[in-house]
Amino acid sequence: MIKGDKNQSTLSESFKKFFKKRWAVPAVYLGCGALAVGTVFFIQGQKSSEVAEQSTESEYVYQEETPDYTYGPGNQETVEVNQSTETLSLPVSNPDAVTVHKAFYDQTADASEQQESLVVVNQTYYPNLGVDLVQDGEPFEVVAAMSGKVTLVEEDPFIGNAVEIEHDGYVTRYQAIEDIAVAEGEEVRQGQVIAQAGVSELNPEAGLHVHFEVKKDGQAIDPMSITQ
Image 1 (cartoon, one colour):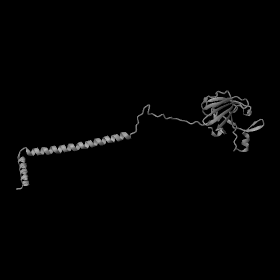
Image 2: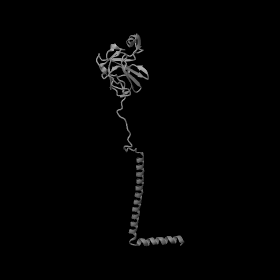
Image 3: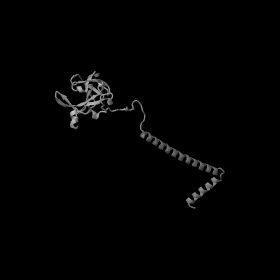
Image 4: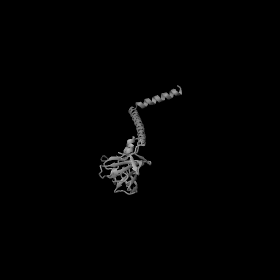
């Protein structure tokens, strides 16, 4: 017999002797069971570890991509609401109660309308650079056409006392007024009473009235075309 066959025969006889013992078979079953259980726990542990790692990664990505909505005194931004833009209005409290006694001189108007808009001074004709507003001969309040700063207050019996106010890109002039209630350099609000309607030697036919002018970049424009 060769040496390899002898070793194999000896190993086979050892196994036979081992399995002849009463406790051999239960021991083998217990060992296989323990090995199987250990393998199951090992696999579950690996899966749990992978799930935990994936959960951690997902949470990290979520936190990284989620914007910070934490609000506090240092994080809040101030947003202006209810912002309003003023538009020029007629310089009276009740625009429906007044009428135009002398209109603005419009170079595109017909000859008759232009003639009605001329102002006569010492037999010299001048275009009317504003509008003359009356209220059926009744006294009325003169108000600021827009919020701004008073830049001129003057008294002149011929053209009538006058007030000028600078606004955002505009200058308004209120002429032939009396009982002036504002001072030069004063800030006024739109609709604030600045004087009362008066008279002037320049337009005595109008009686109680206000001569209202509007200038944009130094150029006189028709107040009726831009006021509301």
